[in-house]
Image (cartoon, rainbow, N blue to C red; front, side, top):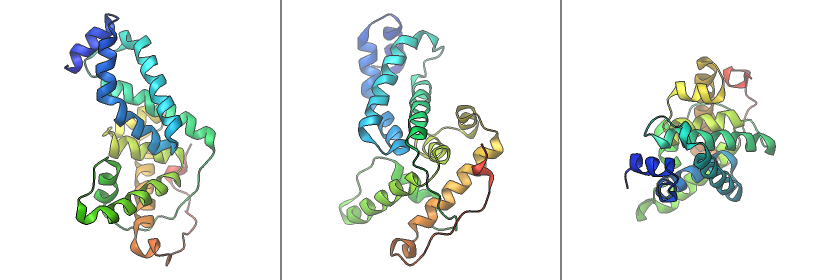
Length: 202
């Protein structure tokens, strides 16, 4: 079923539309929430509640693009939940691996047999690194590199100026790179305390 048809059915009160949209977006939404929260059960609760909210508010959707509208609500709920968790640890920010390393690892792709162990270890390192970022940095990374939001969309969602969004993305990239350096993974590097920068603006 095409997304536009599913939206029209849902607006008409037909739950078949919600079922179709759920099958299309559930896994991606849960993963996005999980990357922000690092709590699978809470991520699933957030997504289930987001679908109920979408059912109630579907008439507010003026286009046939359900995904961005729905995923923004998931991210917003995950940010609120993550702030409550009070689990924010800073990392240092030297340069390291290329951006593509952690961008690719945010995607839920099965590694090839030859690289399965290495990819699994690196994926785990990325997840652990994400949890060491501030909630706003973590959300910005997930929105940018996993959900494909533009910087303008991130700015609107986080209610921050573009310079702050850019600063948070840059600092988050650098901190993730630092953790993913081989020397760091082998315990040969000790994180430094970060200096004040744009990502710390509130």
